[in-house]
Length: 427
Ligand code: ACO
Image (cartoon, rainbow, N blue to C red; front, side, top):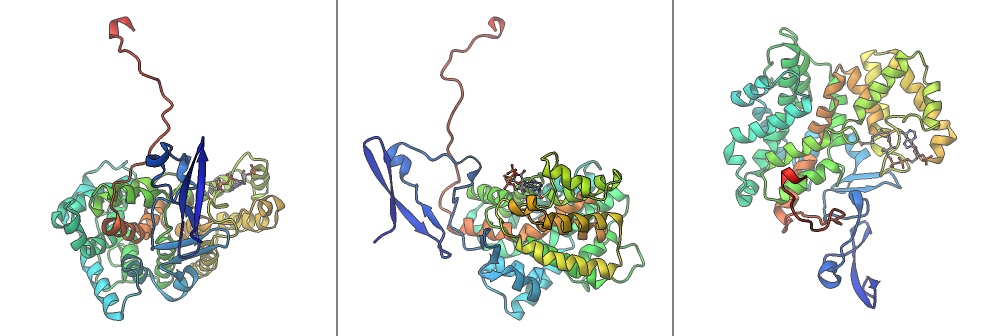
């Protein structure tokens, strides 16, 4: 029996195919619905809309599953690293040791950005937010490498491997350039003897004469990047795909994705966790009053709850133990961390949070680790963007290779009907 459903409207019944994904996700295929019935579907916020078929990432929010290209996130977190996961996402398969070494060396060599790109970061007002600077820096980078940024689909696909490696290499360098400009410090050049995360930490924080990076720090950062590398059709990834569907190059598509990630409901939640902890501390509360106000609906326990994960966030589970290890390695202790631990302990045993399936999400721990690593709060979302870049690029490639149509949703128009123009003196 073929899998079909039907929709009856008025006197007519319309058959609808049911598509089945490789993990048994079912979807009503409404592609012919408007043509056949004159009806469109309405799904404000796209919560029930499959916008594409994709083979990059699988999430089952009820079971707490996240897989990149079929590999479980916990196994990748334990055995892999960020640059290897970049290649997995970009190419669909784990790389051979030669492929990985070639990619690492390409990324390392690309970290020395063209001077005009770095100058463009310096030329921006100091008040520009790190996310605004990152989006603009990506556009400048594309402009400085016109052969990788043509808007000719075939050429952009042919040059995709170089463009992807360049973007992955450039994001930490762009972030560091913005940070050092704001701090009034001169730029620090990448060091080819450092790995990806060591280089980022060095370009951000090292002063002249400093020689080494604490491996526990660069390992914690690598894990944060790996855990953020993709999350299927979220707001910024859908934005990237939307821009790419119009034929735009990877640099423009990722600049749009960075802008979409910027918002507090998306990439900004890890900042909100730290702001909440600071507020609780500043008010002299040990967390108990805040929990009570969250239960009364007067505030939100930031870093708890997730639209998709209703059981637990698998990334948070991994990051919690990494967070404990990193803080121990750093010998960090602070009243803010004590409050975070107390909030977590109380909330996980409280029926309000248990009944609503509210568990710590990835942002609860990532904000705490990033603060302990010394990153200013306003750079947290930039770190999210660096981690998410391979996911955006994998989706750009998927759209470029398989997408046939420009993305263009419809709407239910609820505005004025036709009316006549009234000249300004008669209004
Ligand atoms: N603190 C207190 N109560 C909460 C919280 C929270 N963090 N989250 C949800 N609730 C309550 C709601 O008040 C509601 O209670 P009610 O049923 O008595 O009215 C119930 O739980 C369901 O909440 P919704 O808002 O319907 O859940 P939704 O799925 O829409 O929201 C969201 C998910 C936005 C993540 C929400 O849990 C939240 O605001 N969390 C805090 C912000 C945060 O950490 N965001 C990061 C998400 S992860 C990421 O983007 C990488």
